[in-house]
Image 1 (cartoon, rainbow, N blue to C red):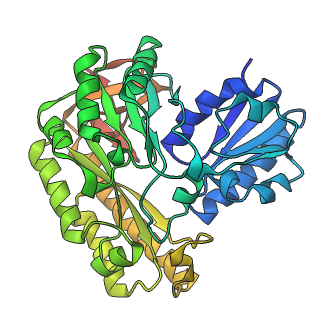
Image 2: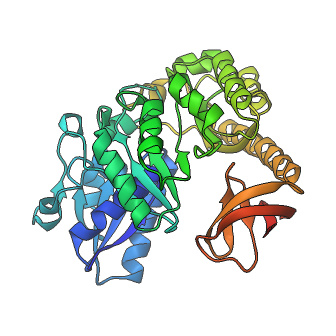
Length: 398
């Protein structure tokens, strides 16, 4: 029997959680932690305490990025039986060891085995790489994940094939920085689509816009099996703030990338990560990020109030008052929500291909949430959108 898992954070974590389940045994709960913000760490601790209250007979094993960065603080929690680092979490010996803290140097770790897992049984996340070679000043994930390491193509192909054979109708390629995949993300996608006829729906997780290669852009233009929602790691819309973040693109380059994507395929939808209240951010800089929502036609914004992470350059920069950070994040969220509602309303009356994932709910190719009464998990087809219910479109299959 397999362990129960509680997963926080990114899609990569979900894939990895599925891979780890068989290693711990049914008497355990694995909490796969996130460290992208201070709030994510707080939620990890909250999840640990809740799991222990609800299942006091189970061993709580904590792994993931927060565990890698600060293992001793999690080991000190009375609810926690074991802490396992990111470099060790694929090894059965780490779970069976009597040592409470098993955390080795992630910077020296080889590429992990392919991680793949279902979140909703019809959509499967397949990890193609982990780690990151960039050093954005706000980010500690490279310290938790190590250098960028790509998995061999054959291993990725075989993992995708297994998920399709197991019933997945949509594959999501995921990782920490998938656009850094060795040999290029575009060529990887081309090979998968060419060699796997069962692969009818391929989706990509978050992309670094400056690394989108020509091969991927060709697929956007000519391959309908590559689904047209692209979530970009933009972070800010002001050039000085981007420079202080040590991002590798300018505002103009981000706008140009979106223009190219939309020129290549008319139904492309754009999501993005944006940080509000980065150190030294002026009101003018904040407004530049706000305007980026329009300039990049962002309809799925993930807004993060800046959170100073330990041992990062941004934590040592002059900080804004927390009330200013919160207010700017709230303003970004409000405008982003209004843009999203306008986008959803624009789809009413249209025909959208929809994959039902759970409880009569699913997503369109452009990742608009759609509910269709009377459907079951795995249903896929063309749907007429007849209305909107809050942040959910309502449709009927044709």
